[in-house]
Image (cartoon, rainbow, N blue to C red; front, top):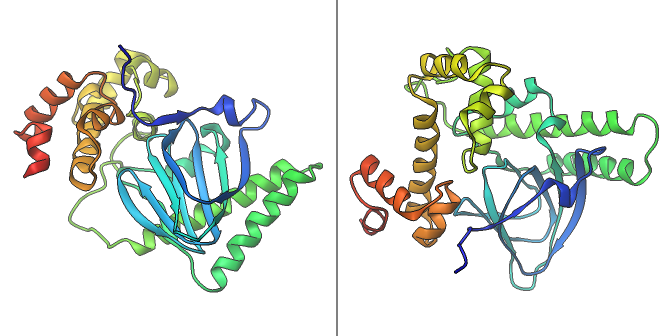
Length: 282
């Protein structure tokens, strides 16, 4: 009996090499790219055409100037409109490609990176991608530095645009603010990997701490145990999929990072007082 594993996951080794932790594609999409997720980060920019982007179950329009940034925790599908061909740049990169300071600037709780550039902004972004593309085709001394700089400009600009387009929320304090740097680093890592099996020891090692000391720091910094924090992210992710999509409950279970359906159903009912299927009906 086969075990359902949810959407396909695209791996680093299939798309990048150890010597080049990034890659730029020019995609032409005529039809559907089915639901999948990645081991890597992905930044896309639509040059022409129109279609639909379904990100974590939520559909948005794709037109010239549409831009998005996905983390390893996201899953998505893309579909061109009838009679249309979506042309887009697709830059993928490993986590170590961007500096830690930039990662902290870009990512945090509930960070979303989807934006629609307009007017002259579109031409400027397209020129930046064209320069990266030319450098990858005609590699020479300094190409890696130029590409790094161009990508960092694109990432920072996208982050600023997204933050500028979101309403200011003064009532809810930023949970990252009082957390010491090691735990802050852990929270960003967890945000990207909560749909995977991530043992406490793995995250502690990533932060350069012993498991016991990391566990103590994490509880003090967040007010929650490591396992409780990860499970809450998974449950909130599953809740949003139940509310916004028609994905089967079994698919949502595995896509959210749970290993078995009974465990997911018990945890969901305990947290939200209703089993997943009844929650969706209501």
